[in-house]
Length: 525
Image 1 (cartoon, rainbow, N blue to C red):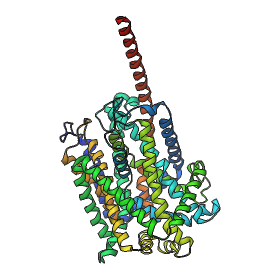
Image 2 (image 1 turned 30 degrees about the vertical axis):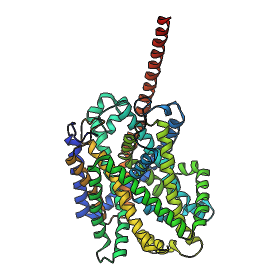
Image 3 (image 1 turned 60 degrees about the vertical axis):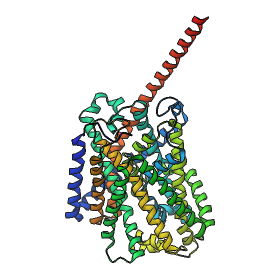
Image 4 (image 1 turned 90 degrees about the vertical axis):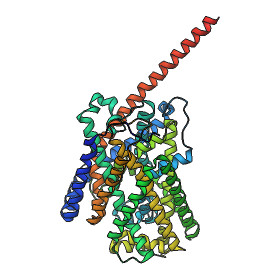
């Protein structure tokens, strides 16, 4: 890849998000209570009043992903016809998985079932906590989330490697529908919404999981500083790590991705083998997986119109919004590294590696503590109800494991690796947005990339400093995802239109080649 960028910097798209995010961060610093109250009210409108919008988009994108994988479109190569992939399946899978999921997968894998356990919706469904509390984490983190990623990754990969368009932006992906307006005001609006959503997604992820890292450090080293201060220090250190990686290009990114995968699966294997809950983990995980498949349509369409429990408003809608805002960076990166793969290979490979790894994480880490709860060896539900401290709860869960200090260190290292591998790809994608034109073999200049590396960390620090609640942290994603849903629909429409045109072009080319071959044979005869 060329180490210099010939594209011209788009200062509007570079400086506008910078100024607005800085302004929002200042407001959160100076007026934390008032800012959080406003965020909460806006979230209620989008998440409650307009919640069905997110559910429909989630189900629709999953259907589109299956259509692309199983139809004739699946044969399209993301590159030249017959081109081979640059990366092996394992390397590609590592980079894809780690760019799509950050350290919050560990936070939620340990604790998510506890947040569902006392929800009235569990009682409405019937059965025990074990039957349903393990189902929802698998549902919220598997097929629909990865469908968001993979459908857009295919669209971006097609745009970059087949059509060879050199504007790596959302607006460019919409060009087959909006035409010349991609270069005008409409295109700018689309790209600004995309960048704001990107920053919101990173803020949500950083704000959710980094306090756990701070808690681990405080516990391991007996540091007397507050968890908030330690969290901010961790954010700055993590920023330094992913900045270093992204400035060293895809080689640094692929190395970190593999390291992250080794740490991640090493942690899962240790918990499975020495935690003492191996049988329950496997059996309840298998049962939860079956129950998710059995009830998938119902889970995907449950909207709670009478608001008897607000479960979809609090959880499913938040998660679909969360994945939608992460779709600004992750699909671009996946599409970029998928050159040479067919659409079918990209979609199905993404489901195998991405969904498979995610499900394994939730089954092992979640069912370890659920097994202790079921055997009455611990009461994690009561602990959570008592103080609502999920970070302390996770530390208590790890304390029940053999060689708990070793597990704590491994969890900490894995979370750092996840953050570094996720955010180096995000910083690369965000920096690409700063250019009006950026060729396939070019990459953003290091000063621009560095600027985005810093910008990605500002809002998370502000949210942590203002001590925003989990609800308000979630709200940032729900609010930002609303316009992104409309843009995603436009992009998918544009991709299908362009792919259909491309297949006709291929068919016409083959017919022409066949006719020329026939004429040549007849001439020789």
